[in-house]
Image (cartoon, rainbow, N blue to C red; front, top):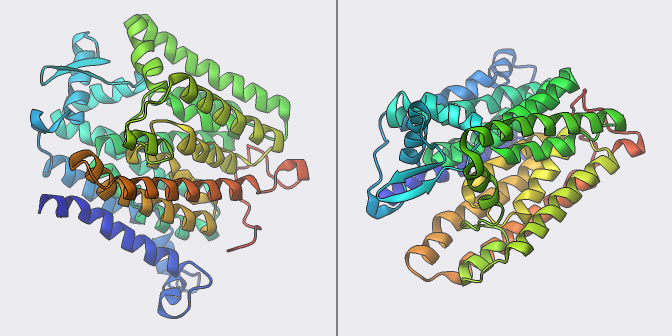
Length: 428
């Protein structure tokens, strides 16, 4: 019964997401298609309501408050690491001047591999106990909605907000796992840096570097997005954002020394944790991944993606989306709670939203069913492997579609300071 209630939010969100996609797809006939016309300009009140990010934020806030204040309970030591408790202990360690990177829980040393900004979030949340930690990480995820509304045109706003609000990578994942909420911060950081860059590229670069003080990988998509038509300005933005990030690294090293580098950086590059990409096949079969192989794949994949975006000079949002999809494919540790990284892809258009819906449903099914069979019951290996392959194939197809979008080398892409989305591609 507990498993049923835990999976129910994913099923509800997947159903709502499918209805939204069908209602906003031009090939859908009949009643479902007519639903989208309720948000059209001829229905002024309905259109304004659906296009207001607060309309979609309200149910998310209610769910997050209920999760934090009503449904939260400590995890028994016999069930494994309690991530909320680890964050709580990390925040209290900041208050007391201890080590927030390594905390003691159930007689074990648990790493908390985040940067200085995340430590501040844990510190603030620890004031309110477990509920405070939940809210400190969940509520910032709400910023995805106003940021998305800011980055898309008014004609696309209602569709984007509906797609984002109904995505099973948003509310269900953020409320069910504190790691899901933490990884939603990556998507918030990406969209916030692009929104800042829309106004001023210097602010965008500094903002991207500063927000990466929480989750360092959030800077990489901005590095790709800095490849605007002015190559000199793009390189300056890249350098400024990296310099800002290094400032956070220097702060962490000044307080916690080599432990900070080991926990927050080095230990994460070779980490393999329940991946749902092709690394999942090696994980399920118990095949070790040499660190040299994983590091090479990460460097070549992410570095190549950034260089490709600069070479083609893709617009900012497609560039960031392309780098995020590459990360989902090449990182040896890309479990289901990392999938909120991909939420900015939903802003690219209906074609991207449909592909993301399929990939998220397959990944969620693998996480809820396939992975549990492998880890808990020692069986179900082939379903897990097949779903890992399907998820990776869907992401590769999405990557190819993004890479085919026109760049300013063809004179078609807007600069970084005018973040828009090109919808001229053929619909499928």
